[in-house]
Length: 466
Image (tube, rainbow, N blue to C red; front, top):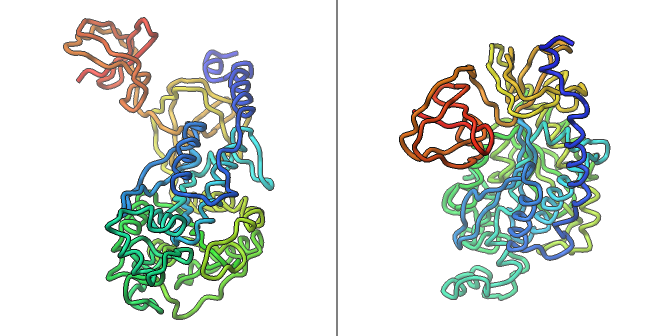
């Protein structure tokens, strides 16, 4: 076998430890989220932390803002793909079962991913290696907490004002707004001035506020959406088993969005709402469609429940209707992303730091069955974090979650460390810190810009000397 081929070919036996590790992880997976309960902000926060701990390579989370009363608005990423989609829930307080739904999605999808499983023919690893799903499971944690627990969950000085906005009733089961009496889904800058049925004052529902994006919650959602740049969004509400999908959708996008809507309607059984020539705006999906020109959907889950939350007895039906909708959205997002992002054709010096599988196309569904070892490579094209390389199979693609680009020069040199210096696994500060060296002279055997590869008692490590 030619030397070059030996360097590139990863033999099957080398994959065996990884397969056993994956099997062991799969055997350990159990449900973290219990959706068959009144799902509180505190329970959601604990479950998010546990999910991230259980699936560290697949799930991450962060706060995208804080509410008036200091509750975090959590965002959770599931998947490692370059394409991104956004799914949010609980804009409205009494609609908290939407949080049960999306949190159960995160849990069930993660379990199937590590088991290399599928849902209705959708292979989880392929879907989530192509697309990262960003969830905001509870946009309105103050409102949800007020609806579920009443004024006792809020500071004593705030209680009289909360009761006044609820017509002095201590029963908050109908509460829809945030804890400032503003309807968050009437806060977005999409024909905000012409919103109909505004209450005109802080109230349990329908008050659009004094100006768009007045609230911390909606400011956070707009800023986060612009940061993530998703190719599609899903905004869960309740109730009525209906589907909103159009807000002054441009003619050039109408057929695309109608096709997606028809597929979602067929999956869920929800009735599409006929587009209006003069719709009442202000909703997140309204703003998303109008601002980005990309597909946005608002499913109203569950049979109509009037002015209250859905009964827990509805959840099994809702789960069956929506269980793989998140995966469908992820797949659609990937196709839209590929259409939107151009392939960059030029030479890249790419350094693989771990074995990676090869693909015939820039798509996780198209594995070749072969892999590359850790090594420096020349790539001649890039799509997101997909790189096209020449191999014994011809031109193939690799996906690198955190690409390391540059040339490593084999060069022995003496390096003087004049201060305590950190050692890294890779020649970049975002890689893991191994330890620290005291001031001394070290011998490097490779160099990449101002990074030097040295041998230590912990094995090979990189130090940066500027």
